[in-house]
Length: 388
Image (cartoon, rainbow, N blue to C red; front, side):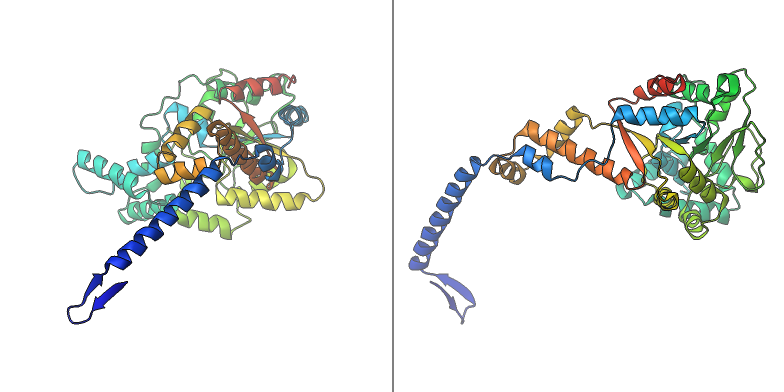
């Protein structure tokens, strides 16, 4: 056995102890080897696994499109537009917007500020709400207009004349030849005026009204475009009505004031109409809250809303999985569990899709899966022409 020499505070290992240790190690290694060999013969019953997953709460794609088409024909369709709508025109992503605004808070030469702000965002990835609060307070304390600075960054690299099949189709739905059927309204979470610009470029007198605060009257026949997170038109003078929802304090205000104009608009539209979410991910806590409230207010008169989501790319998922499995510990566990690589890809995809479907469905939103974002304009065309 191992003996301790108290006088010198060292451990003395005897020959007998070494023999026993070696014998025990050999025994454990042999046992582990036998266990590993037996596990290699274990096969996963994927059908059984899939059967145990939460059932999909989604209806068929065909039925979803038919329901949307019916809502449009009855003038009960609302388009709900997220950030994905504006990205292709050069509008910065949320992270890039924060990064570009952060440049102005770093008191160094311009090139140094650019590098530092990018490194700060990449390394520390600050919470967007906290970063927004910091930026708002910084500009207010320095007597600068926060909205003006956001607008400057927002439009710095934008190309409004870029062709977009998606926005072209949205514009056609807004124009509504013959005035009937027509869209009920549009809710947008974007600050920019790209949609308004495209409507003006049609050469037609499209009656629309941008709504971004209290006291903006909507006349009969006008299509309301609700900028519920604020509106920063590129060339118009900004007023107190052009406040944007950006930082933590804004979100706190929205949470505390359920009866604010933008909250009420969303609740009413979510409750009374069929909403189609495009370019949105349904991760905003306030949007989820308002959908939940509207769902409860509907009672038994529940109509579905719909959201377009892109399917997971099998190739990208495969590459990600291969990188993860490079870890010896992971790949051994995978082999020992009898996991087949291709079946694992399929199982992970099914788990992801059911998770997304059930999450959206809990708010009354049905998921429409697409292989490519380019499918959306074609789908909207069919809805507009009543052939969906």
